[in-house]
Length: 341
Image (cartoon, rainbow, N blue to C red; front, side, top):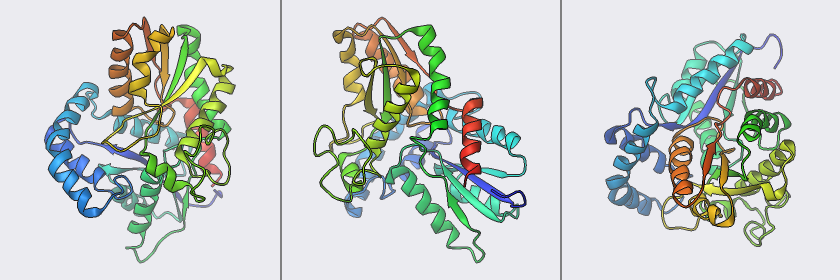
């Protein structure tokens, strides 16, 4: 950024239902699962699966889950997103900020239009997904370009790259996690990331011969897996463990939020957690470094369901560690990342 530039930043996250009811959640899920980058199958099969199977049952289930985490101010993800936006504005008063959810409201188009009315010279789109996936980062970027293509005057657009290995991102997570580790003293720190179908990971491998080909494919970032979500998750975990000063035996990695019958990247959080007490883990702490803000997947799936699974199967104590949210160290880190663009 230069001092005289009028810059707008569009903070992008996945999205949320407008209300914890089946009707609103159905609208949200239909938009989400109609995205060909999310459900990357034959369009006719996708339509049939979505409308004849998923949308008949899942909206009610998801609405109930949302009702478990809904606050007086609304959806946790949207509340936290607004807190982050306001905190960034305080740090960067000359920059215009808007929120754009890839699915649901406020939409990316609404956020884009809002920024355009402020007379900005340049737009930075900031997908708040630390590890790259076509289903998240790719979909958000594609939509912004599609929206921009409808305009006669299109400002220069820059994209915030995935920050999975950025030292300030790792430092921010360490600042959040470290006090919990000191106070709780877990037997194990589980780093649970959002899952993806295995086919998504394989499609990101430009060689077609590296990703998921063997058990060591994610041990380092190389040319073949530079866009591999799973490899980037493991890279984040290694860097964060090193920053926290914990050994390989003191942490593990898993992947949550499976959908459907196709193979998803392993190990699965909902399989791993109930087995940990049998392996001597009595005190478990869990973090979700694929999420910068707490949402349904962290608050209901991990803080509630995973906790119940662990305690029911013999665990003695469970500690969910909140995401970065609008933590001051994360605000400063994100400010620094934006200023570099």
